[in-house]
Length: 114
Length: 117
Image 1 (cartoon, chains in turn yellow, green):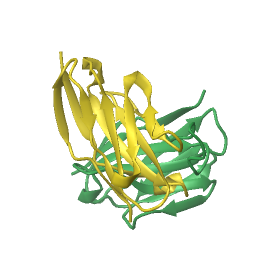
Image 2: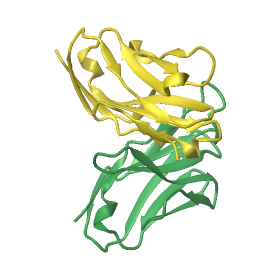
Image 3: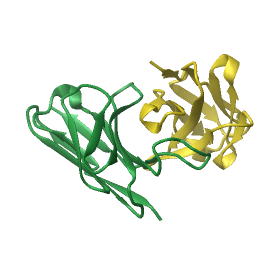
């Protein structure tokens, strides 16, 4: 069965620091990859998605992620974080066969101090 | 625009009591609907999904059941809650069953924090 690993459970950064959240998955076939974010008191929402094509995906609010197929990784990056980026971030993977096979990681709580 | 409503936001129930969580979607027709649970320290786990009225698929054996009595209504139930049913429950919908293009994604509700005591 496929699985998703997020290595950092809690990350604390100062504003303007660079961010990289790790995500690795186990699945041998074609996949779609997602990063979801949940800001305090808000719904879980899509940050960015890899469907096909360019492995460097740009999302909302200056976030990007790079799909490295050989490493089964989809790490999330942002060059300079802001206090408003404080949230919980979830990586998720599904084979092309459908959303019912979507598997989430355990999430990373990011705290950005002003 | 499409919206998803989920209630209640928080719920405290005694062991052995019944459960009913409701989710409704507005602004779309024939959505694919999903129930997820996040237990403490674990990722989101898919419990049920539905591609149409009366069509329910279960991903994991458990103490819960789901029903879809109307096109845009998805209900999560239990006859007798267990302590292990505590967790954060999320309802979600998608327009298609597969992530067929870059715009396809899951839309999530605000969740229900269930504590079984």
